[in-house]
Image 1 (cartoon, one colour):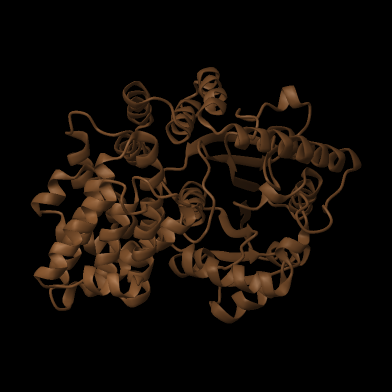
Image 2 (cartoon, helix red, strand yellow; image 1 turned 180 degrees about the vertical axis):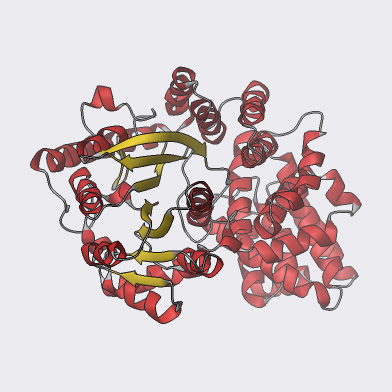
Length: 518
């Protein structure tokens, strides 16, 4: 029956037009279950009728029970199919019909539903930047697209993901000129302001979103992050503490239970001076990053989604961009730095790029997994580039090369117990490493507050899941290094592709430390 209905509804003649108009009226009136509409969108995906699938997806959004992961996956495939079909028979006409329906519905959704669905749209953009940007470019001047706020937000995200901030500005300008922009549009503008380095503007957009549309997790976290990074720590904590009220009670209760269990696990490990957490799903469990088949899969995904071409699509790529940007700045400021080691490299795409552009520097990538090291050795081959899984041997080899050594790490220490991190720094000190740069995540913990090491009474606090946040001032001091600079930067992404998690209020903390003589 669904096959017959679909054949009729996607017809290109008068019968199809009439059938779709009648179907839309029936859905709007509640005569047809939205769940069926969503199934029809899925059937269109399978049968290669992506444009029509977007039309059905739009009809389903107001009432259907939606899973955000499933919706993002569906939209990714439908956007991709509609883009691929632009050159086919009446492909642009069909795509315009599907897209105009989808975005018209999105424009009319109430705030919470709109935020939920637009976040799924943003995730689909992160996973399909080229197809979505092609759709944005093709239809951005059409009347229906210019009148759709949701399409402008979609086009801004797609242009950013595919081409960078400059390409997104024309659509950001459209959003900024709206008399009453949605909460999502204001959040989009807030994120773009972060990219431009204007945290005060980001803060203002978030405050306006709250004043006009009420509080929600995404805007609260972004406001708290902007304030925290401007040094307004007290007010940032106050806004972070309000997250509970914007979350479902079940989610709050689950977070409280998880936090209690993980805090106890972490504190016991710290008290015992452990450097390794044990089995699966334990804090600092090496098996997460050494099991061969898992590492191979992680390496391939990392190689595909962590490079500079994914800067505004995945948090891993953006974070590496920030860290390696700091490395290049240090090269300029300190010409005596001739050697750099990235601790926790996984796939060495950034190391390879750095070695290519700085042939006079010696670049090394360390990874705990010998599988990752072997894969890097096969994939990247330059005279000034090397990979290894023995840090002591790597630093020993570099000692014989003139110049100073810089060790850097990102997205690594948050899974390491403090004793393990100290062991790395102590190895650095033994081999005369002069400077260490940490570019690890910080942010709002499960207790809906930023880390408070004094209150916790420990050098590391639980963040989320098996992740933790460290007190680098204390840890560096314990191993003979001193912090010479520290700053926080908000993550400016609306979503992260490739299955990477992105938390509200997430930050990158940049800490530069120098070896203390003696």
